[in-house]
Image (cartoon, rainbow, N blue to C red):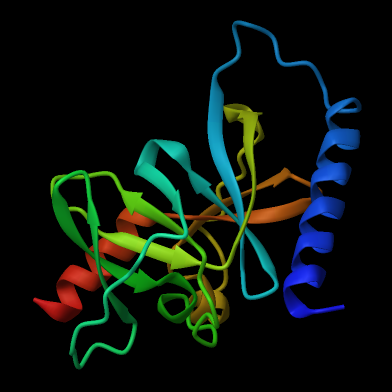
Length: 176
């Protein structure tokens, strides 16, 4: 089976699993506050992104490479009549650079910044009360988790939540 066929099979299996899990999930009452999240993978690790921090999710956008001393900068992309720099989310989180980042999110905010990654799994809604804040985490985990703000159990795994605003701030501080 080709690499593309394996990826399609893995995605189909993940979607089947999410569908099956949806029948066992607890019903959320109308009065509970809901958090919308995107389940993604960086490398092989599961993560979440808060939809409130994202202006858009895109697939297969053409990223034009530009010369830059910043290794994590993949290039620029044109969206809705504007240009935005696109960074490799895996590299920013200190993983090996993504081989073929198919997906991209555009960070919400006054200055557009894109983050590319390889695997999008699902849109997930969870009760806000189910989010676990781990601000008191041990310092040894800071290297790979510097942009993580809490965890949530969803889409079949305990997933750290990437704080997009923190990633944007680090880029601005390091490259301004």
